[in-house]
Length: 130
Figure (tube, rainbow, N blue to C red):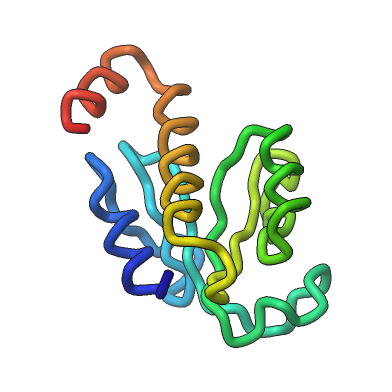
């Protein structure tokens, strides 16, 4: 899945906004002000990825801790969340090795995890738009 496709998919989620709190190089996607994804171009300077991220767009997604580990075991392009809580976030390297449907599922799960922590009122207003 290409960066532009991922960005469109992220922005198609209800009540989603794009923000740049970490600078113009890191796109942050928020639902009702709560971050559920980031998207940026890997530079190869990242210490814990052996250069895997260089030249590829990378997306951080919130994830259930048990599922996060399973996804890392299944997909070499899923690594512990770069600059994030590594138990609850994964970095997905968009190098073409992960099927589109799986990326969309991971995005959906991240979005739903963040929404599930909101007030019932906010959850209902978002779920009505799904």
